[in-house]
Length: 347
Ligand code: SAH
Image 1 (cartoon, protein in one colour):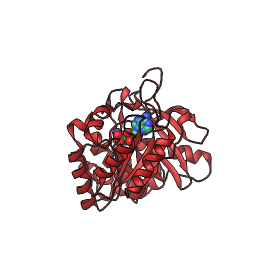
Image 2: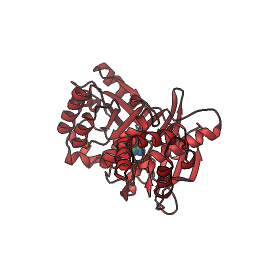
Image 3: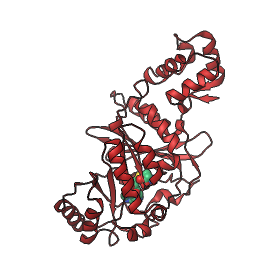
Image 4: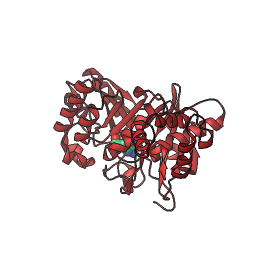
């Protein structure tokens, strides 16, 4: 069975042609599915009867199902979704005044081993299929539809569990479906991928020719500190990462966002802020400071608000643009770094 949600339009065209059909059938099918939300192949009136028969016997539209739902006092919704094989992933809906943001997972578990992050407590079991990443947005759209206010997901951040650049091809196909005018039609600038710094993939991403945003989990102003908290930095040290960022800026014509979690006594001193300003000098990047969400099993603590302020002021004085990330859903463990498919079976 071919799950239509697994195919970007070019891939669906290839598939349809390989089955002996005309290429344009793929676009018709794509529009029925995403633009009109029709799932019953019999209703796809402009598709030939014979292809409709093929669709009925060999194609399906399968998305994850809701296993558990938690709603935060701020309206944030966290869903634990069950996939076809019983694996589970989390997805989060955040309501900003400018729109509804889906934070999607890209893998079951994560192998990056960042010392402060809950997602890595469960080692990577597998990568998610395109339909399983897209399915998270589709399920959230269903949820919004059921609220009856005519709202939809308007923005997507690939910042849930998993390292998106460790599942590059599927994440990119997912983005192609999100972004396509016949797909979910979410603007590239409303889509953000966050990576812990898999350097070769930053080069690939730069060459995609898309206007999607790139966020990089930096979290340290030098390799010494970064080595302690992010194992990936031993494979791709900061020098290589910064080169890649500059290449991205030049090639994609876009600036990156550096994410920087403030960990008490680890990376939050005035000197760290000065070093950070030095490190990113010469890039157009801006820094998104993230208040650390404490994770029970981990020793790290959130920085004092006075250190956060001093850190921010130091950056600003050095001419670095910085903002402090707004927090959502921490009362239901839906905030950054808290996603981990918490359930009897898993952790
Ligand atoms: N693997 C990707 C995608 C995860 S994004 C990446 O590393 O970018 C999740 C963001 O939340 C990352 O910037 C991550 O470093 C950050 N994060 C992880 N644990 C956190 C925590 N406990 N509190 C706040 N942010 C955290």
